[in-house]
Length: 393
Image 1 (cartoon, helix red, strand yellow):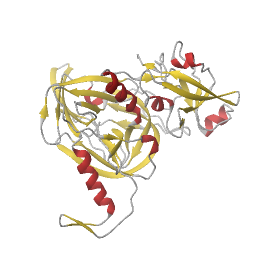
Image 2 (cartoon, helix red, strand yellow):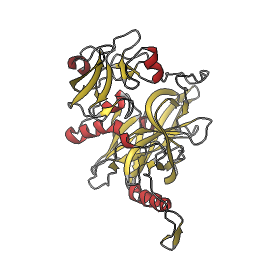
Image 3 (tube, rainbow, N blue to C red):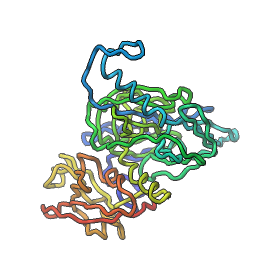
Image 4 (tube, rainbow, N blue to C red):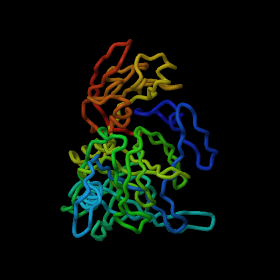
């Protein structure tokens, strides 16, 4: 159970526990296998890194006779991966950080590396929060090798492992094209691009989407963070690639790579791009950083929880929290008329559970937007409107 849920848009059920580093790992339960993720941030005393970036590829048929630049292309897939890597590569940057660490032996500097996605011509870059956390120095290197040292951290998302940084004094960067992570398919091909090991810039790997809606307890750099609604992939994710893009074969970013499973092979995770869209829109409109929130604590409905609580639906979110109110006092949810024990089944046109959980679906909207929310109350569907406000932690 999460302990500090004074503000809303949090899962109230123990889907992912915050667990101290070094504590014995719990065995998988029937309700959820608790996966501990080794965030690829730490490379040792002298070097710390970010995580891996993924590029999603759409399904394509196989054609076997193409030749490009004298090289025989054995399948359409190979040609597509190469084309996407070339198209998106110019929007991928490497991030280097310097952090001062103190021990009983004294203080020393630790270098780190990660990856970022250019999202505007004037220098906004999306990456992971853990890539830039606690850094005393930050620089960005473009795909062409140009180094930018005038870089500032604009803000970090308190509910997701996301951060936004700004390269100052630039006007002609090439932003990536953002896709729709709610439309991805299990089995869809993916490609990862990132700053592997902090020294192999724009490394490309490929795989498929192995699953969606995954909850994890992510640990790295001495911290543990609960993340939900992630994309699972078997594309190789390497230390240093965190914060990079997850793109389809049309060249659209659908995720931000974040973590890999410890002591496992081919299990990596990425944050859906829709979870960043609301912040991006607010940045574009106002130049300010803010994350929208609704103000509910909830239990994600599965067939098991539907049976346990005798619910009329098998998907959605039950507004409820153990030991506290399901609806945060004074929140947009309360003002919209949402009540404890309501079942939220749709955010806008997106079905809760099928297209994501409450937090990720709200994240696609900007602060100040009014959103239609459909709830089940006494077995009847009711639509209310909530005007979202900035999350204040």
